[in-house]
Length: 374
Image (cartoon, helix red, strand yellow):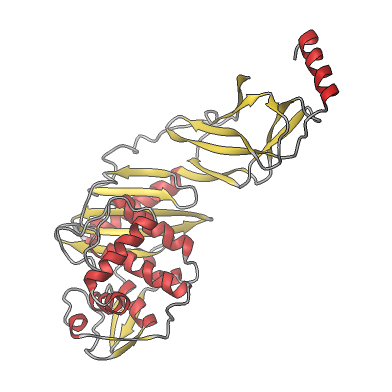
């Protein structure tokens, strides 16, 4: 069999913006990702270990959402506040020792008020101690794809071993949005009152016209000011993580700048639909001369808004394909490339079943090929 490379060229121009350079953001670590396609629009030291501060509370909330979803926890469940939780320093929702607090209030206390005391209540309820809960956090972190994070507490309290990266934090954010749509709305709440004390969400982008509907801020001396944010505009969701900024004001300005740049310069493009036949591939010794090569899922890509002329498609398969061929069998790959973007490889499957010819028909086909060629 000879290797057949079939090139399909679609007309798009790719223009890299001069601002997409290493120093574009003032943040020490940054990443901007399209949530649907996983395309990285911008990154700077995205895999550099840093103190995630209270952004690591997203991991604690992730475990709460998961237990709510699988039914092992309810929003109305009442959890007891220990002395350790009541005495926890830093940002608090001002829980009273020995009181009973609903999971729903604790969620709001963690997300809106960034309450360290609420995190400890959850950790102790789930795992007995915060140390045990940290082990559970790390197990779940590996499970959802975090490669460089280590959590030593539930809050993001400064600890030299409590580390993460901008990319890992973006994974938590994306997984939260995608896996828990019924609970994600908690991240959009702008204020919460508990025990007579009203506190506003530290994510100041929630009340600005930039499309942000979550997630979490963070600040420690070691990590600086950081923010993991999710924004939605015209059905395009961008996830941004920045860290290492000098002030809340600079954090807000950098976040707006990066999000605006992303939406201005990139868009999603619905490329292929599930079941679409990309190509008719030649078949050898089958009851049909060709078999359709189809994709089994919708394909969306993120490209620069002004792109045209440089996007290329290449279908790779061994031609002709020998019968028999069962419908649904992977028999080819579609590669999508363009300057400046990572190539995308999509498996292609047989769109129909092709049976082998009988002995006599096979013999006649071989003779015909030898005499007349392809």
